[in-house]
Length: 274
Image (cartoon, rainbow, N blue to C red; front, side):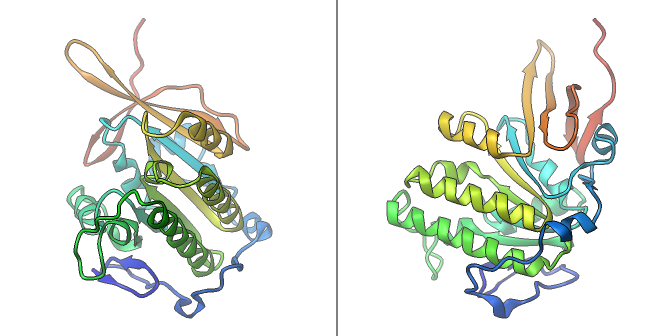
């Protein structure tokens, strides 16, 4: 792996490096438009075939997707599988990108489409690699939002009308920053507008019970699509269940989908017998 001046952490196996590296600082420009999005497919596959089948091919293009998951479910594997469909910009907030990259490879996925944005390293470490002592400082926390917005602007220029994914792992990191909630709402609005102006799917992966209730309500309202993962326990097993109660532009499925994680996400097509 290597660190670049524009804040991206690239995976060495990338087939195509990021373009337009000379556009840094163009803070008010976005590439793409609604007409560009309309010229592409209306539905974009997620990369999980049985899930796409249940969704009649995938999710509407340029959707902001809020993925609310029980932290025990290991649902980050969904993100790894989503990255297999197209070029993916992966905002790593909870771990170093090299460890996420390692997990992706260990599960048998190809990381060559992924460009990491190292939010974790920017926030927790100095330029010399030492752990910072200012975590939770309001000034530092506001700066990490600026860093994120800066990279989003770059991504919008870099995408140039191509189909891409933007993944935040996790977005709960932002909802727990020590900042005025107005800054988080500004970031959310920017995410929404950027997603609409690109041909993209943006996934905000968040952990249940980790965000302030009022702020999470705003996220539910803003999102075009909501993925909801829960865990049910019986006397002899744990069952992961996925529902998708909201899909703007489509009729949401009423099915509750059981899944398990092995070398990827495996959808259980069996039905419960009453």
